Amino acid sequence: MSRRGGSQPNPAEVARAHAQVGTDERRARVAWSRVLEHRRERASDARLELLGEVMRIGHVEAWHRLVDDDLPRCSSARAHVAAVDVEAELDRVTRRGARVVIPGDADWPSSLSHPDIEPHLLHVRGQGCLGDLAARAVAVVGSRASTGYGEAIARELGAGLAHRSWSVVSGAAYGIDAAAHQGALAVDGSAIAVLPCGPDRAYPEGNRRLIDAVAERGVVVTELATGTVAMRHRFLARNRIIAALGAATIVVEAGLRSGSLNTAGWAESLGRPVGAVPGPVTQMSSAGCHEWIQKGRASLVTDAADVLALAARVGDALDQPVEQLGPARELDAMTTAQRRIHDLLSARSGRSPGAVAHELVLPVEEVLAELSVMSLEGWAGQDDEGGWRRGPGPS
Image (tube, rainbow, N blue to C red; front, top):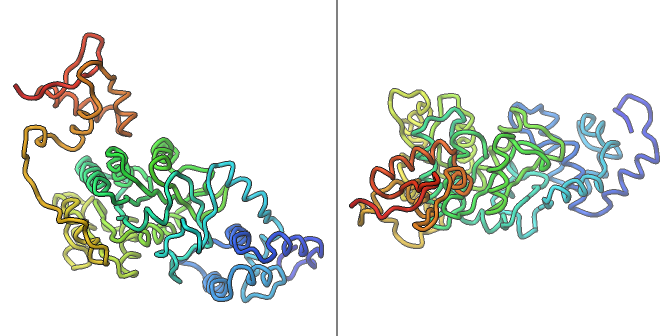
């Protein structure tokens, strides 16, 4: 099979291309995922026209018409048909521990069935059901070049949402994304990580352990075929999925040109509420958030209570009012990170900072800093072997 204008396609290749899909919707979507990415940002007219035609007539019919060179402006996609091996692709996905999810499956969230959003399919890896997790989910996004302030806020939001049984959707990137996921996992909550690469890869590679941890408590998803590497246009494309999965999108830190504002833009176009966390007025890392708040495109949010009040506007009422409470007892005066660490420590046997950091999916340096503060208040102390134990608190 060759490009239009070249040699005539091999009849055996044409027959094979038809046969490996047949009338199976799932196999047709797998085949299309190998030849046509769902790319909206700066996409050519030909690509958009072809995508629209696939969605209009359905993946099965569109595949057979593609093989027969009977679709408008399809030469680029058709050039890749000969290399498609649906069976091999399904095998690669399965070996990675993922599953192919399409509309109609229990894992498929109805929020993705939108003409501007719907991917050919999703590769889903993890213990959770994406459909269930997305029913109560909030997207938390922000800059990769985050500050300590932003990361602390993102962890607090992630933990606060997860504590109230809401899933945290983000992209598992360095910075704000990772912090939001960490916050959810630290309280045994659920998270959804949307990757800009194939299901057999992790991006960023340095967050592979975090991504695996998300899969244990929730799901890791991608629309991209195996072997696909992360590229700029794929980050922008996956942002639409993050926005669609969340009842609201919250931006914690974003410069004026931050990619996280692209996610907020998708949420805005879908009619979903957008929230933004204010930062120091002297920090350009929050300039994008301030601009969206100033122009009325985002609501100002400072904690999980604000976020859930915003998310409830799209019809998912809160189970109970979320109250703003001051410290009711000395233990409540600790930060969220300190409380998580305190809960893991035992009064009888010591634990190393590394073991605590691994359990909470936090940097060792951050755990050591928190332990030092806790020791001053009596909430933690070191034993003779260098391990840390739970303390009785202020005397």
